[in-house]
Length: 505
Image (cartoon, rainbow, N blue to C red):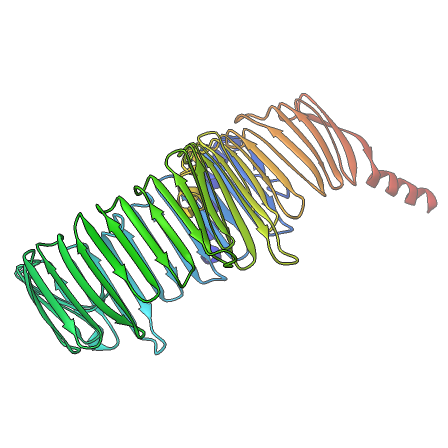
């Protein structure tokens, strides 16, 4: 966002929420301006940042040299990032969202029901895609062979959509044609009548009575009285896999490396996987399970489950399990540079996620959620945060849309610690707030009217009661006390210096 637009927004906020109370815009300086939950402006000239909060949880803005974001919660939130050349806009999130990255744009409304996207190709052509699910679909592509238009259920000609190269329909379910690679599937009165052609395959179906499909040297499939009887033979990368099912009595899937047999589907199951060196029994599934690896087989799988009392599963360096499900659950997974372990009690009532480095010089992180009381987070950069209350965060952890549009309403207390040593806290939307760091400490208690403020920051010290009814302030130049809002200079280094110069002269 350009400087004029930024300045207009800040002036708008200041004119409404500052001039109403003090008649003129104050000097915001390094310390900013505070009227508690009504209006709080925090300025850091060294870092070139400014944060504004107004009307408690409803209005907020953050400004830096390259990034500007502001919102009227929960109505809208806007983020402008000049460095990334991007714009984000939420309206009653997640009802409507808009994202721009350079010349690429994406809009969603009503949970992806209404969608519009513009993507710039390498040649500079603007491709457009939209849909009003499930009725209208369209795309205008640089390659006209990839353009399409569909008005469901009347007529459609979709390209590269829903995992198919082509989808054609007329008066659906009267006629439907799908294509993937060279294989084509024609359906009449979907899903009842159809036949297969293209890519060397052939077959037909009269669902659910009988169906048949075959491609020489690749696969052969049959079903009768679906889903009672089904038979499949497939050759994949030179390995043949055969399956037969007569539900619910018996089914088998077998190859040279793997055999899985099920009786009274899905309750009793036996699996032998020679490639992975494991054997598994479900008796019955999903209540009791035993999985064992061949002795000495590295990276094998071990599992014991007696639901809901106990479960323990381990495969390689990963593990998962529970005790008295869902009372206590745990899991651990290893990624490229860190290992993550998660413990939960009663799903979301309490969760603890630890991230520990597995490489030299790596950094750890942790997140704890206790619904609905608090959320604590320490990222792998060393930044800390603690929030009370925490209503949606345990359900939707790391959801930025929830974080910036709704969380301010229930965050009665916030505490943050930064990797540079700075610490901040806020209670009831800045009615009481503190800040500390290498420069010193600041404390303000201002429920709209100033009650108490204390500052010992670099070369300045200040203590005010009732906005200066009584107080004391000192800096490099002078020391001042306040009595009934009247400033009284008790010392002045400037005056003393000038007097010494005159004496020397």
